[in-house]
Image (cartoon, rainbow, N blue to C red):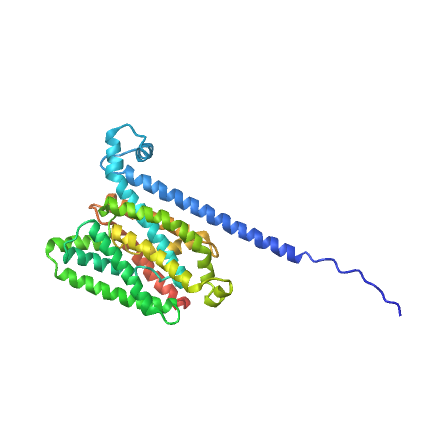
Length: 358
């Protein structure tokens, strides 16, 4: 019987077509992330300049830029911009960047939108040590910031040790963090009850959070730390994406899970500790910056840098409102708290409805 040879079927174009669609979607997602991040950076820079323009003596944007970079010849403008307004504006920018970045690292690492330094004991640990140093030891200025930094690091270590059970899960970490946070808040309340009027007033101002209270040393330390930590975060961002897939998948991809988790968490804790030591526990900034950035850049994209700029925008805007939009000046933390409280209520309702709390 003769064997009839048939021509092989022509290669299908489905696979190359599907590949091109995936590549195109990836490029669009990356373009959106870059575009949104650049827009957020521009808004943050505009607010940074605007903070130094407004006051009893108005300065033009061009004068602000020239004075900031040392090109302004008018001594009065140099004094107003560089000596009076630049430290506050730089503090607001740096604190916002640090809190926004720290918050999104916590949320992605623990896979929970409630995983914020506000709730897991880090900020309250810093507050307890700072208030204790003011009331019990009569510390001032930089020493208070050092005490806050130590408190934040010790609180994070305590939560991590208590939450460890052959690994870390977001739900257990957050619950233990809330318990530790309440313990430190109760301690802060007790210390305040033992303080005299002057120390109590100073401690309460610090507890609310205000960018204008930072000293030159604290601001320099925060800026240098941001310059060092930001590249580290983006080097570890790929490992963060792997950890979000689960420990087993991350190990299969070659990630050293616990080492990466500890490194990322330590980075986030250092950022929030330094920011809190500089300006106090600015309420809700770390909680809301990440989700806003994630919505803007879209799902599946890295929102780390976008979250940092959103945090800076929130703090800069809150400081402008606190200083210039109200009948009397208020600490910056009062405005961030007023912004964040409704968001927290909405988040709790939506998380409970969608079953994402654990």
